[in-house]
Image 1: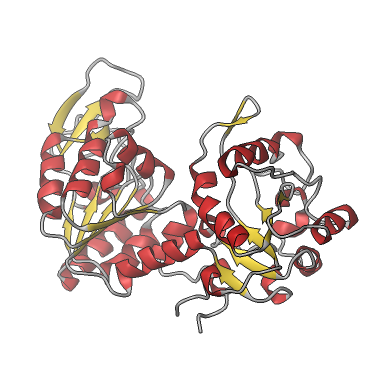
Image 2: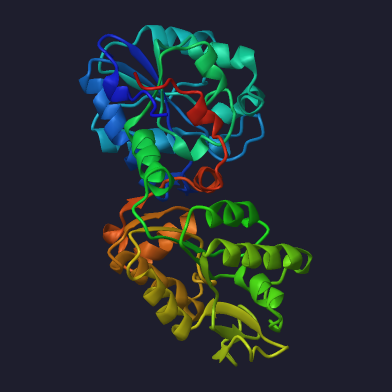
Amino acid sequence: MPKLSVDQLDLAGKRVFLRVDLNVPLEDGRVGEDTRIRAVVPTIEHCLKAGASVILASHLGRPKGRVDPRYSLAPVAARLDELLGRPVPLLPDCAGPEVEAAAAALKPGDTVLLENLRFHPGEEANDPEFARRLAALADVYVDDAFAAAHRAHASTEGITRFLQPAAAGLLMARELEALGRIFERPERPVAAVLGGAKVSDKLALVEHLLTRVDALLIGGGMAFTFLAALGHGVGRSLLEAARLEEARGILARARSLGVRVRLPVDVVVAPSLDSADGIRTVGVREIPDELMGLDIGPLTVAQFGAALQGAKTVVWNGPMGVFEKAPFAPGTLGVARAVSGCGAFSVIGGGDTIAAVRQAGVIDRIGYISTAGGAFLEFLEGRVLPGVAALDEAP
């Protein structure tokens, strides 16, 4: 069901508890990469223009329920100052009398940032009392942190029991719209491109996709388990021997459903990740016992590209090889160009996949880029995301 959106609310004079995902890399006390911060600026500005004051809340890193200065949101507050062009004070905590007093004193147009939610064990434990204390700070709850929606934490799920209405922010609404477009009302044919290291991480995803896509393209380290399931030798490539039967079962089910599964036909092999000697491209029937596959080859890139032609909807998660190493990047970059150039509505998610389309210079030709990692995968697996389920339904 569609969720209530922040732009459907009357926010004049209200204090908005805005859960955002500001979990960004820090370098020497500064924000190293600010994509996630920029992504929530439109929701912040919408609330302020509507006459609200905004209480921003986020986690950063994994401080394990203890105050750890390394995970302070102070650098994030400084970057927000710059992006919003107004001061965004960092409060000393995210709950307690001092924070409650600061929240009560807010005037329309004011914005503050709570200190790291995960400095409190009650956040990840979804402690009702901690959730109630967060709820007491505001009049309205808005969640713009789709990347954290797969966690039932106090600030993403528990708080909605004490603070209503509970609405999706503009970023959250766009995520749900784009991802819903993949499965609820996709334009067919639908193709999925999956990569990454381990097949075990994506078995549930593959199973779920089989009933929803017309073609499935598998690369990355996970492809070698499927190749081995077909009887190919994979040398020293990444192989999950305990998953061979499951891989065979998936391939058999795909055949029964009429889903075309594409696997690599050639791979780039090397003695190791760090060895420049002996790198070459071989067919999947000719992988030497002493070498490992670290990228898909050019023939596979061409075949994957051809398979995507004619697709109307494409979803991609996971690189085709160890693309952060230059000798093993061409496969992933080639697929990025194929996805961006096939004319389909494309949705990508996951940090590596986003980095790949950026490196390939085609990021502006992707239909939608999800800010989420784990939540993106769990949504594609068909799981209920607690942070989404907790939001009010649209009228």
